Image 1 (tube, rainbow, N blue to C red):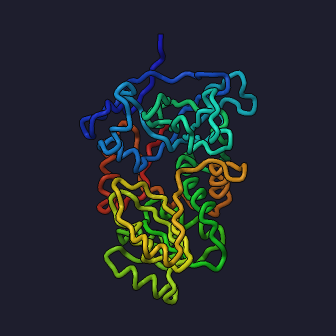
Image 2 (cartoon, rainbow, N blue to C red):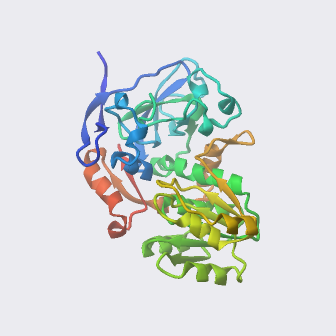
Image 3 (cartoon, rainbow, N blue to C red):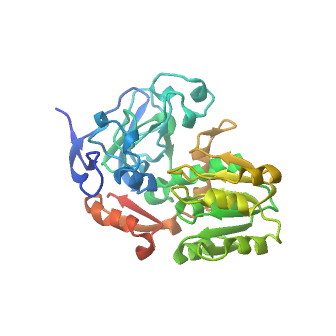
Length: 366
């Protein structure tokens, strides 16, 4: 008889009607090199919200529903495959949710090179029903390949560790952008991605960072976390950046908004001659860009997709190291803890960020 667990269950239809809280099949280890985890904390990600609101529904086959989502996970090891010898039951861990085909016995060229975010067979994301992946952190238990399970120290809370996935995205963006000490950078967006991007830049010695925020509480948080300056989107951002850079424009612009915003076009305006734009935000529509200005200014537009290995080193592990060393502060980003059974209250908190001063709400279990 299949064991069951408690979970927030998505039937594939748009929220609020598509979610319920109840019993779901508990995942079991698919192979000897996999690990089962009891999920103590799971972040509520913007991509989760896009999915349940129906915006990415076309990417998720009907056969994958009902599903349990949630990919920002930390918890405790509860079962080990026979090939896993360097973990033990009870270990505190964070899960890297991105899995390439190599974790399922295949080996495309990108996964062999450590670029599993570009898997030629299609990236598997724990807690996203785009492929035949296992239940995510909105349920009590998840399973992950051993290579994507990282121990965390007792000094780090499960909640702080759960959102390592967010930080790894910014570590990857910085590796692509290669910012240098003395540069002046602009971060467009002050959600959790933008605020972690700010901290990664600071950790790499770039202290002159201007953050553009939509809401006043986000701008204030950016200042607390090390922004040299923070301005609001309804101000004259171009004038503020010109003043900040002595009229040169930013050496680098990190676009952390995506969606339907015109921030990529704005990044071109704000970027200096010979500068770089690193595109992190996931756009939901085509963007009109001033290609001629990019040409004349020789601006490099660098897409940054998730994370993987960089020069053979796990970017997720690098992100975890930044948190444990205190160079990046995650406790300051957590703005609400909810029991999974209170999912409606938690998601309402996420949907009304301005009213609730929300940056990163999280589900937690005892």
